[in-house]
Amino acid sequence: MSGTAIVLGASSSWARALVKISPYTFSAIGIAISIGVSVLGAAWGIYITGSSLIGAAIKAPRITSKNLISAMTQPVNPCCIFSVIFCEAVAIYGVIVAIILQTKLESVPPSQTYAPESLRAGYAIFASGIIVGFANLVCGLCVGIIGSSCALSDAQNSSLFVKILVIEIFGSALGLFGVIVGIIMSAQATWPTK
Image (cartoon, rainbow, N blue to C red; front, side, top):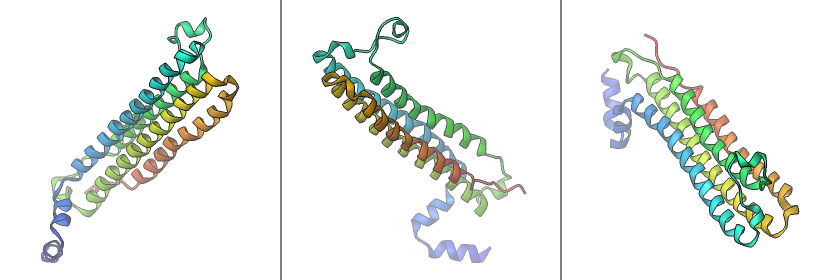
């Protein structure tokens, strides 16, 4: 016990603060970042795509997107629908990872709350949430910018749609990479049982 006090006393005040914060707090912050920043990335991507779509529709009214009900009977520009769907997928990635991280939380006895294994589990969930959240933020921006260019280029030349769609799919894959890394990181979250 005194060896632990010596190590904590010799370390910086930041290290002591990080060890004194409950691992459940770190877990909750990681889960919130996973969902919140992913939704922010999706919203930002939809905003970028939507503003360019409206601007491009002035030059080429054929690219305006109808609502999904009338899309069944009227021609719709698919690049607009795909861009919005890919941005929404970013938000769904964050929700899925938040649910996975929530299932990683386990109750531990009060005497084990600050045990090294508990701290490692809390930090693993926190890191996983940060990785997924910010990967999805960047992915949402990427898909939004590509969707914006898709709307603008489709207004100029409709034959470019498939080429830009392929690039948009690769941009959307960035979010999946973040999800995969987040799931791998969360595998380290094991709480003490005794």
